[in-house]
Image 1 (cartoon, rainbow, N blue to C red):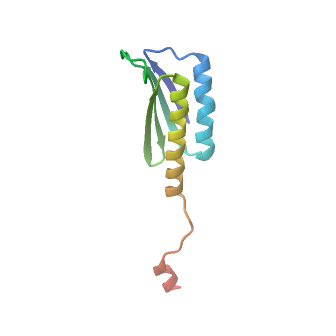
Image 2 (spheres, one colour):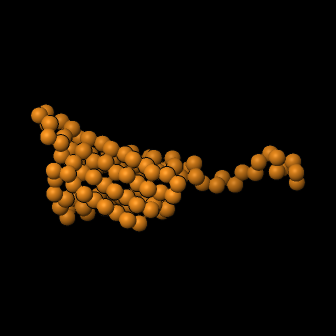
Image 3 (tube, rainbow, N blue to C red):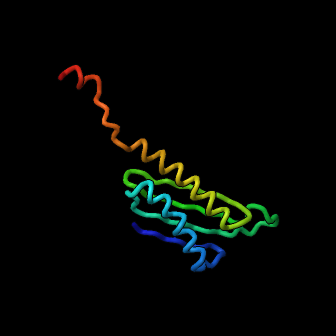
Length: 111
């Protein structure tokens, strides 16, 4: 799995990097077929203070790319929301991809 964490108008400190890694462990624990993860943390230059901190992730799994973005006034809260959204999408993708061992009606009739 390739992991890229980058910042735009923001220096990615080791504590932020470690926080993102610990949060992404939850996603990789649910679904281990992750090929590539690209995380972008951004501070926007807006006049109002709310929702300046943005976090976005582009997760590449076999057969699909999943993109999630969030914005919050606190960077750590934005990362938390991001991982919650990403976890929901990964679980939904996993349930769609899983083989549910259903036999089609045509095959049952042939046997």
